[in-house]
Image 1 (tube, rainbow, N blue to C red):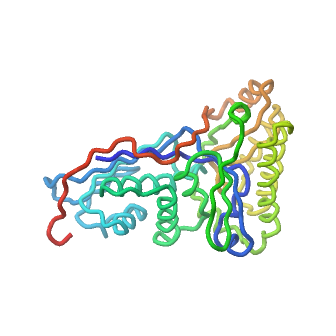
Image 2: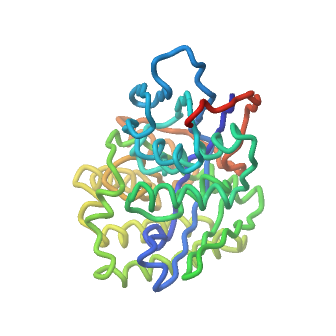
Length: 333
């Protein structure tokens, strides 16, 4: 049996520039971090007592005799990709799917990590990120960028640069005290709405929004400079979040809604310096940068939403339980 633990991510700046159609031409860059909310994937070989060969438990339960019968596209393609057979897979998560935190990519990374471990093979963080990108973007033909898979695999606060040859992951060098101050000044709330990021991105015409995306990429430089330069007031990071959120809303009419706009305005009026909706847009989690003296007021103003306390994390995907299994494929597998 193998259990993997994979974090979710929050993206601060540069989202959208990690879409391959854009960064192959213009290059891209994002600034993001993972935090202490996780998905867990439990995988073992299914004992041969049942009529079915594979059992999957996620938001639904699937029991099938043949891999081609599996409805969940990522699981089906991952099992074929890594030649997995007779599997029992269970998915658990601290936060809901389709909420703007890269949950599907965290699951893909954690599942691949578990599959490799079950086969007795080690896959490093880049291998897992690359495989998850290939799984979701090529095999499953899902629209979207590359940052989620990379963040979930590597973990930590990073600047991820994209270019015509691929990507590089550069940790943001920031003192523990300043990093903790940033963490303490960020408040996250669940709007209650969920959506598929691919639907949002289908409404985004990259060619028409290149100017906004180019500016969003440039904001990564400024945001990183604020974080690493301790002579700059960290409040500037919050103000920059407000600017990038307004810029992002110009990318697609589906990114925000009237309800989200009202929630955002409510937090700003209560004292938040800036914030954004995490993910592609349309719903999910709102995050705000708030000075310590204004935190109580913002929490009161957002009291009808679920407040989610969190801490940054640095580990990325991990195998937290490994118990080797003696497994021999059946004839014909």
